[in-house]
Length: 277
Image (cartoon, rainbow, N blue to C red; front, side, top):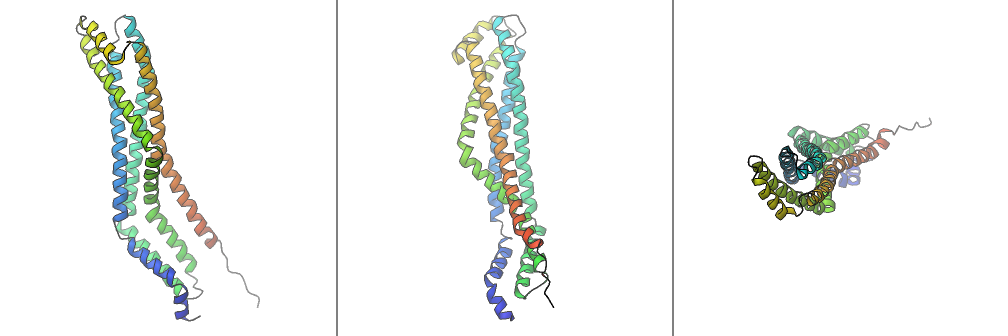
């Protein structure tokens, strides 16, 4: 087969490879991915700060249960498991923030000039092998192309897909849970500040109870109800962030890896068929 016929046969593939080689040097996709991850990082860090604020407010409320008043004893018993749960929630939020930061670093690595150059070289190598009939290097060029495409775009695509899927499917639920926990934090912080002042002046205890009554109603019953609601919201919000920052990225990255295997395994496993003499 002549060179002109070979070029005509693979002209679209060669043109696409050359286009990909040029597009890989554009920074638009990386800027979009980094901006998306920055927004996700801001949300995760905001939730981490909320968890620490909840933990601090509950700890102050716990520390003010030293006397033998029944209401305070019940407060301390109810706050122990809630404080432990919020502490674990802060760990989860820290892990989610670290996961997003790791994805950001990997995207920056994938956008390094060396990776771009290697991907462009793999595109050009595959394009050249398409111009010659029965090139023995075509199989290796195809495998190198798909491997470099995975390194260049897999993490970027997984991060974008995770952020967009999370915002579309669970973003509204995540924002609602955060707002609810922030309201709990405001109430607990207000009560903790009043309760901390009451420790130095026994006469302030009545004012504390009045302030608590105006905030949540019955001092014990409504506190337990609010703590139960907060516990459920903390567990749900933890699951939401685990799904968005760990499960989704790993899932999309796994799908990309499986796709790479589907594209390369048949090629790699192909063996020349001996011809009869």
